[in-house]
Structure formats: C-alpha cells, structure tokens
Image 1 (tube, rainbow, N blue to C red):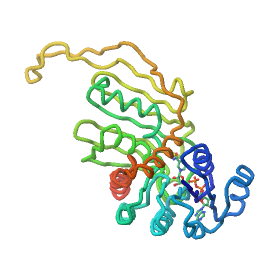
Image 2 (image 1 turned 60 degrees about the vertical axis):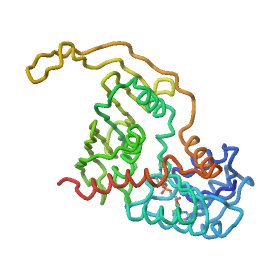
Image 3 (image 1 turned 45 degrees about the horizontal axis):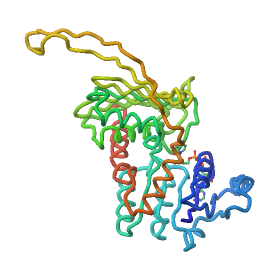
Image 4 (image 1 turned 30 degrees about the horizontal axis):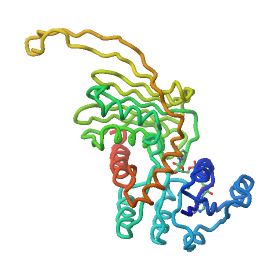
Length: 329
Ligand SMILES: NC(=O)c1ccc[n+]([C@@H]2O[C@H](COP(=O)([O-])OP(=O)(O)OC[C@H]3O[C@@H](n4cnc5c(N)ncnc54)[C@H](O)[C@@H]3O)[C@@H](O)[C@H]2O)c1
C-alpha cells in the first residue's frame, strides 16, 4: 500500500522512518512546503521515494492510497479534509483537530466515503501502557482510585496550541484507553499564558464515576518528566518514560487495607498500609510509533476502524475544549 507523508518538520522524520520500516507500507512521497525540509528528507531516502512541495499533487495521484499528516495542529483540518475528499485513508498526528466541530465534520466525511482515519494517540501503542491495560483488565491492579500524569520540559513553546492540547492529549488518550472510553463528569483546568498566546503551563483535574485524574502539562519546567501513576485498590503502577526501556514500568504491591469490619457508619474499622513486592515486568522492545502506524495499515487492510479513530479523538477533544473554554474560572 502506497502512502505519502505531508510534513517533514520536527516529528515528520520519525513518522517517515517508521513507515519506511513497515513492510505493509511503501513510502511513496514525502511532501513539505519548505524546500529545505525536503532536501533533508532527500539526504536520507535519496531515490527510495519521491519529493513534493505541493500536497495537492499527491492527493491527485491515484497510486497513493493513504496519507500521513504531520503538520502543525492548526493545519490538520484542511489537509485531512482535502485528503478524504481525494479518497485517501488518513493517518493524522495528535491532536486530531483544533476543535470538536472540525473533528465531527471530518468524521462524517470519512464515514460517507468508507475511509479510515487513524489519530496517532501514540501512547496507546506503547508496550508499557498496553501492559498496564492488561493488568487492569486482569484485575491485578484492582479498582482504579486515581491517575496522575506529568508531562513537562523546557519548551518547545508552540503558538497554535496550548501545552494542554499538545501534551495532555497523550494522557487523556491513555486514560480513555485504560478506562474503556469512560468520560469525566467534572473537568477543571488552571493555566498560565506565559510567553505564548495560549497556555504554556496547565493543571487539569478530572472526576470520573469511579476514579479521579490529574494531568500536569508544561513547557516551562527545568526538568523533563514523562510520568504516569495508576493507583488501584490492589496495586499501583508507575510508568517513567525517561528511564531505559527495561526499567520504565514498575508495579508496586502497595496500598491500603481495611482490616477490621466494614461498618463505616460506626467507625468500626481500621486501615493499614500494605507494603509488598516491587515488580518490574518484562516489556517487549517495541516502538510505539511503529505500532501505531502498523495498526493504521492493518485497519485499512481489514477495513476495520482504528482503536484511536475519530470516536476516541472526539471524546478527548471534548475534554480539552471544555477545559480550555473554562480555564481559570
Ligand atoms: N505523536 C507524538 O508524540 C508527537 C510528537 C511531536 C509532534 N507531534 C505532532 O506532529 C505534528 C507536527 O509537529 P512538528 O513539531 O513536527 O511541527 P513542525 O512545525 O516542526 O513541522 C511541521 C512541518 O509541516 C510542514 N507543513 C505545514 N503545512 C504544510 C502544507 N500545507 N504542505 C506541506 N507541508 C506543510 C511545515 O513546513 C513543517 O516542516 C503536530 O500535530 C504535533 O502535535 C506528535
């Protein structure tokens, strides 16, 4: 299956590399409106694909079956719309679009044409997040109590999105995946518009029926952190994406046990903290971006919707849109 990539800026080269490594796909064309970016691509792939500055040219090419969109978020809507109209399946970087309305419009268009949209909610395809999902599904973690996510570093401050839209989107997709698509009934965010027309630092709080969540997103941090704590009634998982692959995920047999009675009304109970084994599970050495692109290829081949398709992306965007509209209120 021939696929073209639009956007060869910071992230596009990673998408190109993983498309190129995938035997189900052929990297047909790399497109970027900036010639300098195309020259960089040509230095890597030489004669192994074509190069184009005008994306309309590749949309008009019937040999191209799918496009991958890795341009800035504010440009996703127009490009994805044009690609769908041209009959191409679409892989699009996160966040899907800037607004829910845009996402709904593209979803209706894809459905009317029987085309796949895959949003690169990359963390769902990370082997550590998949392992946490397995541990939740098997009951090992117990009932979820809370999820705490931290995604912070110094820069790169983007102008077309807030740090929340750019970073928390990963954590919201993880929560959506781990909770089987649960939606929060309480959404509250505070943020600061430092050095940017949109917030470059946000704290997002969410209440779901059975658990709560807190997500920190920052481009103004002295530390680079990519951390997730998933606390259950039986065990707690800590995912630290800054550690080496074999040490990223740690499972703590720690928690709190009710040890005497259950009659809370009369205080006839006691609680005791439990400290047990600390376990580092085996995690297969897989690239999340490769897995994401591979899932897209499989969805096209089997004509099945993507696990991170528009339905999930719209649930995530609804949270972001509500949080942004009510920021600091
Ligand atoms: N999945 C992840 O972990 C991850 C990480 C970083 C960025 N991203 C996403 O990737 C996307 C791109 O981010 P980036 O940081 O690479 O942006 P960037 O600004 O560095 O690169 C965007 C590139 O797209 C090109 N471009 C824009 N409009 C175009 C058009 N109409 N035709 C052809 N080329 C066009 C630009 O010239 C530029 O080279 C964003 O949606 C971002 O959120 C995802």
